[in-house]
Length: 309
Image (spheres, rainbow, N blue to C red):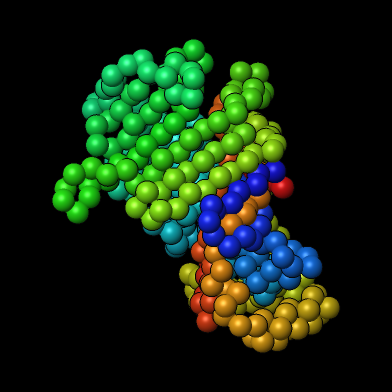
């Protein structure tokens, strides 16, 4: 389990489970503060297996499926999950090209193969430990533990309004523990966004490494689910589930009676569990995209790592 919170913002616990194996990605997310997970109107699960990109809305019991949108930029949300971005981890079995949202490498497999990579001044000390600084100037800077060879801090840069590089994100990796032989993973991750004056803390309480099955990325919608095919713009209903549909109808009545103020709150706390594979790591990132009731009603559409609660 991972606990996360945004410093200085309204507190709301968010739970998430993420998994990665080869090209496949899985992400399930729900929020605290409700009697049960099914009462959360933002309770969703996403599946991407390299061919399809599907999303199940637990609250409305609606399942959206697509192959046409199983490409960039639509899948970037599950591929660029905080967990993978902070660690710079790209699953070894994923032969597709890693995203480069600002045109420069994000994942370590690309960073360490970039011809611009160089060693900075040093070695230096980071939190009392000797570290070597390696960087792609004006793009990314990494502090690598001199003894263990693990990245303990990362800074990402972008061009500011005057053209000079500015830090857009700083990732701190802390409290490393050993998993599955000789895999070192942090139990605490901090992220700072200077331009937005926002900071986030993530506490990882448990990991599963190199043990995720392929069935994690498949899904059979429960009875009563409304299945929407985004490619053909058609609907079908999974037989049965009348009791569940009655609950969905009642939730929608309750949802329309709520004020938009609650939907505008930014979650402060998030909990998650990550599973990694191919010899690496996983962590979690809170999802802060809170929707108003109108936006919620629109059509919406997640070797191996699993993070879960």
